[in-house]
Image (cartoon, rainbow, N blue to C red; front, side, top):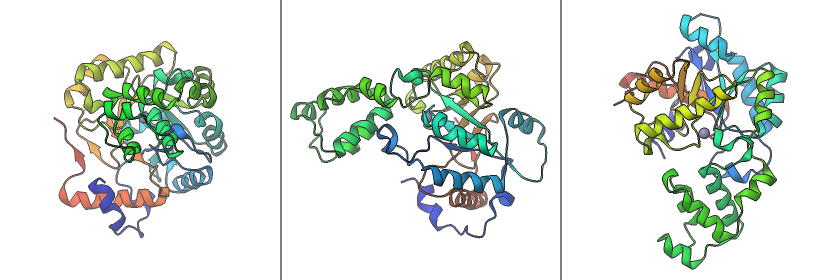
Length: 332
Ligand SMILES: [Zn+2]
């Protein structure tokens, strides 16, 4: 567990008025999905909220902040307009199908805009991210499936006991192992994709854009950037931006898959030099400023806490770190 997660619950925070004490100009929450169902492709990786929990989050944030659109976000950050309430920009990662089926109708009713950061590789359910594959495999194992002795040996895994843990630890660069395991367990990811259709389709994306929602890039196929060299990071980023451009979608924003942790300054310099249309990039390190001025940190909201608890704890943590002068992210 990260130090932050260990400290957060113990910080005095219950008295904090979130909207008034929010230390930055804009609050940028990030979610993946919302559902009342068990979604095997995400269930073991993300603690997503159910519909009523999500609606409560929204209603709380709507009282504390003024939700803005992408265009307002761009002008706000440029001109620092001062309004009575601080602003919030709602974001979703991974382009999951529930954005169309569940989330968009709720947001339209409440008049809230959201940005979606999508991976071209998964649009129209052509493929699953390696994390989604891992989650599906873990679900099958929890339901009683077991790996063959040969494969266990081949992977140098001792026994079936830590199987779920081991599967969730498989990194992007070794993602082919997930296909081996699926084959061994008799699971077809292709069938899963056809049956469950976990991701948005291109037509849905265009329809959502017409309804006013925004889109941005999230890399081609969701690697962990820290594991890649700069050239591959740039290819992943630019190819996903190019896809949006080719589809006549807005390509002014990019959100790092997983985290921007370990991404060097040289990457940002090169990216903004090569992508003149790019307005900014997004990480998800909580309430924090970045020495790379056009990289904004977002607040992960899927943590089995309410929005109120999350934001109060994040603000308390920010204040604590202010004493230590540790609120700015420095990069190599
Ligand atoms: Zn993601």
